[in-house]
Amino acid sequence: MPSPVISATGLWTPPNSISNEELVESYNAWAAMWNIENAAEIQSGLLEPKQPSSVEFIEKASGIKARYVIDKGGVLDPGIMAPRIDERPNEQISIMAEMGVHAARDALKRAGREAKDVDAVICAASNMQRAYPAMAIEIQDALGIEGFAFDMNVACSSATFGIQTAADFIRSGNARSVLVVNPEICSGHLNFTDRDSHFIFGDVATAVLVEAEEFAPARHWKILGTKLKTQFSNNIRNNFGFLNRADPDGIGAPDKLFVQEGRKVFKEVVPMVAEMITAHLAELSLQPAELRRMWLHQANANMNRLISSKVLGHEASEAESPTVLDTYANTSSAGSIIAFHLHSDDIAAGQKGLICSFGAGYSAGTVVVERAG
Ligand code: CO8
Image 1 (tube, protein in one colour):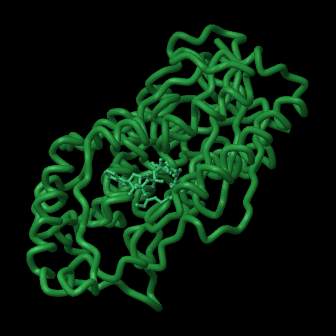
Image 2 (image 1 turned 180 degrees about the vertical axis):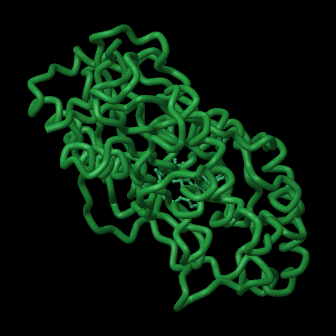
């Protein structure tokens, strides 16, 4: 049976970054306007006034200092409070596919691989730009790949679920080289008028090239094992869909955007993920101390601190569990892949690490890797 490996990863970062200061200034301007517009109802007690957001709270509660976005102007305009991304004609590549292609090309270049050698493309992301044709097929077409492509969505865990799916294609002999692409335009589903969550997400695209070991470049990552888990929860939800659409002219009904019970998510997901990692390592006869690094999902710095403490028995250093959410914020499925992409060059042959994602569903995935070559 062929063994699956990760040959390379790729990253595409949007050119526009928004600092906490800029985001809070626009939220507070919007909230002040809202309070003036609703002064009578607030006065009569029918409505609660909007409280200001704060840079200090955001950094302390989440570890986020900035986020990259596709459109900065619309997000920061207190009269809009949403990204304004121009619709493109059908003849032009769609924005999500374009981001995915950038990240995929980066991964292919790093692997020294030509597109024609790839057999399949999986677009694994939290939100697809349209129902069909699949984003993955458009990415496949733009790259000139033969074979097959399809989309899959497991929210923040899409990348690890995509990696296991690709690894299974390799093991079964159905493919020799599979591109897993994660374009995430989280800003399109974020309610920038919700003080509790307006700071959480950013936009980005990552790609992971999963291949059969004998076909892969000499320097690669062996996949020692993958594990996936899901457990239904309404604590992170987005009701947007073809049966219940958001207001096409504006921000729309709040439940057609990202909503969460952040505290409950924190409390329920941390033990679930820590137990999952510990059990997966035990199954592979590995001690936590044998992990040179954990590339954890980037949702919240405090969450990662707690998970790594439970797994390692001590608070992880930056070298043991690197953070990228200070500059990228939560980029859903792409977060752990960005961390892996940016912080793995120093890992020596034979050293092991863990890629781990978790999020809506609930869903969680672990991929244990070992540097080779
Ligand atoms: N500024 C100032 N104060 C604030 C703000 C703000 N912006 N927001 C809240 N506060 C106040 C609250 O009002 C509250 O005040 P009080 O104590 O007086 O009631 C106080 O701060 C504390 O509020 P919270 O309890 O909400 O704060 P927490 O400490 O719990 O931190 C977090 C909030 C950061 C949200 C935290 O709970 C957390 O990170 N939880 C986990 C979240 C998580 O991991 N979610 C996963 C989502 S990812 C996913 O899978 C979805 C995929 C979809 C992707 C893309 C779509 C966009």
